[in-house]
Image 1 (tube, rainbow, N blue to C red):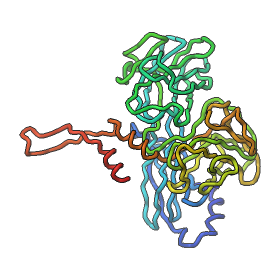
Image 2 (cartoon, rainbow, N blue to C red):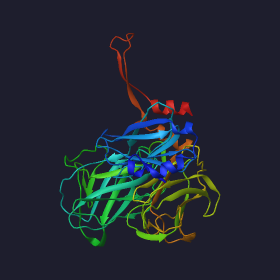
Image 3 (cartoon, one colour):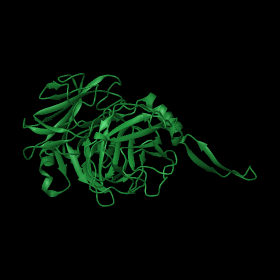
Image 4 (spheres, helix red, strand yellow):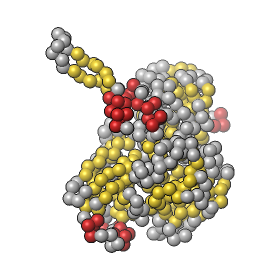
Amino acid sequence: MESRSSVSQWIPFCLIALCLPASCLRGASITGRVTDADTGQGQRRLTVRAYAHGRSLAHVTRTEGDGAFTLDLPVGRYALCVAAQNGFRPCVAPSVDVTQGAAKRVHLKLRRSLAIEGDSWLQAHETFAQSFRATGLGITELRIKAFGPPGRVCVRILDGDSPDARPLGPERITDRVGREGRTSVKWSGGEVPTLPGQRVTVKMTALHDTKWIPGAAGRGDVYPQGQAWFDQDPRPHSDLGIGVCEDNDEFRTNYSVGCAAHMVRGRSAGQTFIALSKNITFASARLRPITASTYVRFSLHRDVPGGVQIGPSKAVAPGSDAAVAWGPDEVPVTPGRTYYLHIETFNGADFLVASPDNMYEAGVAVFNGRPDTGRDIMATVGGGTCDPDFIRLMKHRSHERIIALQNPSFEEGVSGWTRASAFLEQIGAR
């Protein structure tokens, strides 16, 4: 169950807190901000959840206009999370210690690897493409904006700097988008694999041989490492307005499915998937309650439904941003092995879960204990990057930084030296 900072939502927390020793009730606060990692801009009205390690209870608050938040918590160790929204990837701080009488400050940075913003109008075409340079181990989400009459768009990720290059993974069909609206599509980790520095092209084609108008950068060529194409016509001085999320830091996406979906009713739902990370620290799903005061729990299991549960379950209220978090040692997994995400209500009541047609070939959806090979559930599961993937990421030049040196032994000084500081420091820590 969830407890909120507001007085009207304090009852679920108090019922559980009465069972704790008095020493556990004395704690402190976690304060911080949720910001765009690239711009530093605070993100308002986002839900921040904190889960005590080994327990199911969620402490919940929302960010203010500048992204600031405060959580008053008992003493203990917590995992914090913010669900994926507005083209950002999920954000997790899996291990935050709260000690008696000491305030803790946590800065949660929302990340996406590429964001080309713009609203310029273009002439309508059937196909548009945009090339860019990958920074991570795989594409996990693409977000676009479109003008004109709404329609669906087929999105393909291609290996190379050309709209004629070979596909890197499965195509996705967006929801209907237009009239200055936005939409996104998602891939599970490993479905669209990349290497840091690899040239990649996004190709977007309107269905049914129609024409459409995507958003474009208002200042033309704002992304020097890529260019746009209108149909097959290269436009080196233009860029399309897109946002791309990749696995490019400590968070590895094991499973992620989005876009158009039916709502399926049941007492429980789940999804089998293949792990890519070294643990599970985050899970979310698009849910909808049917009755008031309904709570669901998320749990991870080995292999298939009914398999051995790994770590504690975590509780949350159903919603479009229903998300839970675990500590780094609570749910260890082995990359390449099959696991099962299970969601069920506490009281046996029905709820609704978004379920698109089969998009993830490596797993199946499960409703009320029965597998459905034709469907998946709209959910995301992520965890910490395993060591081989971490090393591949840290070798990329984006993790280098310029070190300004002042050395009097050189007549003209030394400036502009480079070291792979993030790579060296983090590998050393491991």
